View 1 (cartoon, rainbow, N blue to C red):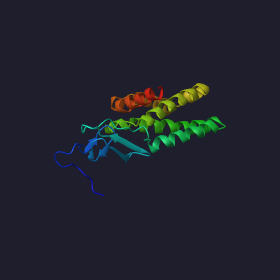
View 2: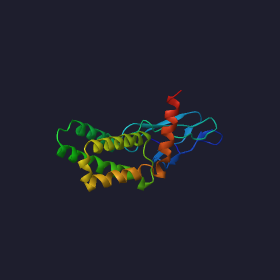
View 3: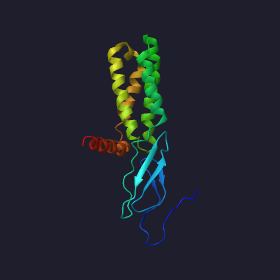
View 4: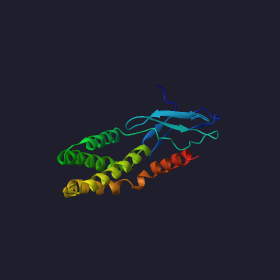
Length: 175
């Protein structure tokens, strides 16, 4: 497949561009068109509109989700059906460790997908509820540290693009 990096002079278009927020390479497209590309991490597609003046609009990545968050959401189900404290603790340790790891992805400078931020918040609420129901789990230093790390990583400023898109999508859903 040939990637178009420019259009002839006089043709209104959006230039090829690398989106540093999400790590997506957008090829040049004509004005008033949209481009759809696979999400670079995980599943789904990202879309971006080129307006009639040849300016890129913000990418829409609400359909993107990271494979890691999908796996973490599956662990919630395991914890929900666990029938003893040791099974809960083992799955919770894996869940908190995984969440601390993926929420720390901000080190590479790319924003988390909006759906991943939603999942992270849901996971943290689930973790708080689980620990509230089983306070003896707080004796695990690893679980406590991973929850604390996750809480501090998710609001990282590198995630601002994801939070802003999530807020915009939620605002549109209200109307």
